[in-house]
Length: 360
Image (tube, rainbow, N blue to C red; front, side):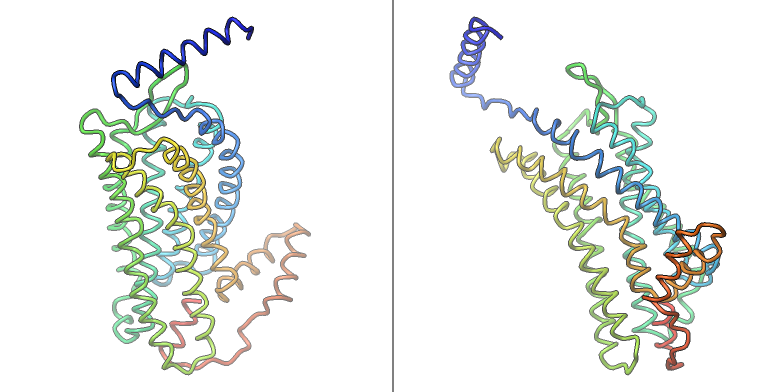
């Protein structure tokens, strides 16, 4: 660019700024740097979440079918949670490419991937909530749970949960569309009428169904479980409390920042907050906290492995039967050294003991 171009550009900017000052209209908030940041930051993180989420949750599904064979309500919920996480992570390669370049997969896939993402998002959180209720019934209402915590009821409640997740995700299917702007193709939710109202409702839906209600139920269930365990002389009590603490803290730590940023985005949409610099920072925060929330779908298998003795034992058995992979077999021997088989330990035979053992 030569000096004449610079002078022309300066003059154009001056005219542009004077125009907005003269007519008293706020200047549009430009966010060009945010796209460039996302193109560098998001694809590698999405790829890592996809690989670890696919591997870990596929292993959960394999263990449940090969060893546990869905003999309890807990097994049914674990399977559905793993399927939810798999549905969620299968969308990430598309979003990763989209962040790096543009949407090249067409309108149909735009709608399907947007819908799958929301179904996986809602169903995953709903099944974490159901597992909290399942543990609550198993430990706090042990006698009643013998009738209520059956595979049949587990299947029925799972079907209802999937139906609710599909229903609340319908806006993603109906309103997602492709459009081209400044030579770039986008896949976004676009509302034709009352756009601000729809954005606010969508944000409130995610905050209420994705955080407030599940968190309230989880806190109630786990506080009652801890209260019950305080009166229980049991070797496994400490491990049960650790698992409870891990589930709640991880859920809060990975989902709360994302929901807070979405709530602030709602205030921007309602024009309660009108600050371009704040909006830019908010968009950066949205990318970071959304990726952090995505990581949560990789952590459920990790929780089961390190805090669940039975699940860990099944993973070791799975590695033993892998047949031929020296790396996996060596890994298997390390697991047995650091996490010995707990079957030799003596546990009480009470109902609560049995349910704790099944939960862990």
